Length: 404
Image (tube, rainbow, N blue to C red; front, side, top):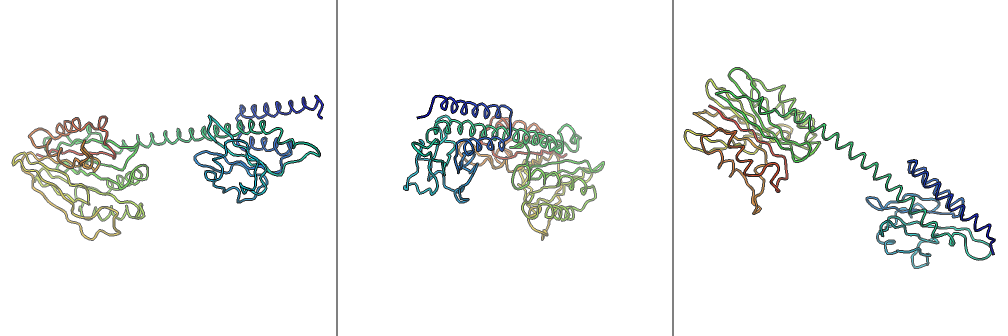
């Protein structure tokens, strides 16, 4: 029979251990240090020969293995252990060789860890000291596991906050590449209006408008396959290349070949870009364009009331190492001529019945003599873009042009 002094000594050991662990947690010591202290308490102070911990984070993982075979780290926790909801003495039915006791650890009544105990010291007489202290082991295990999970979550929060800041910075930089409508041409011969809404912080849509000379204006719209940061990076590179290569005298076919080579080299065949580019000379009133697999811009001739489409004339940029055939189209412009270029985030937008909007609303709103800028503002308000439409799933970009 143990004397009261021994019980006092054990109680002091437990309190000191809990205090040490708690102070270490409050001091924000790293996970490795906490695990080392915990392992020392179990192995050195309580005489446990082997310990192994499975911990639940995003999935079950082996957090610590002290003495068990390596293959124990790959036990299917959900299949083998989740049914254990109390401290369990291992029998032959559980088939864990070398494991004496399994201690489940809970947080808010949910299992967050399992502790394997093996090779425990036995006293000459009576019960093993480990068995006497199982509740203490479960308590200190709970404190350690919860603390380690909190450390992981805090690191994850910091990582997410850093990523969010990077995305916000990337979004601001990308918006700088998209020209502001206030700085686009607003002349009697050419008026251009743009609308840009990335579904995520950054996107793969791009449009541009450049005054190439006193008589020529160029404009384009493009869409990278895929979404997010990879699409945004490729599009940024594409924008720089396009602006460097496009001029008043550029041959549009040659421009497409050069851009295709750049995209093939940069994307390594993993992405491509649909692209529409046009150039308008208001002296001879000729619009020339190439459509590289982009959604066909919609046109409306106010003098005739005729709706038209500027359809594809070649494959997308970066789809093939070499574009086999490119066809430039030259179109004479009579009177007031409207063009609406857009990305598929608009045309594939679904209505309340699950049907794609297509070009129906574009045609409906531009079929009049009003400026196309006002047409697009009215259409976006009707569709509830960007804030009131629950069916938005992609970037939406629009470049609307009045030619006269």
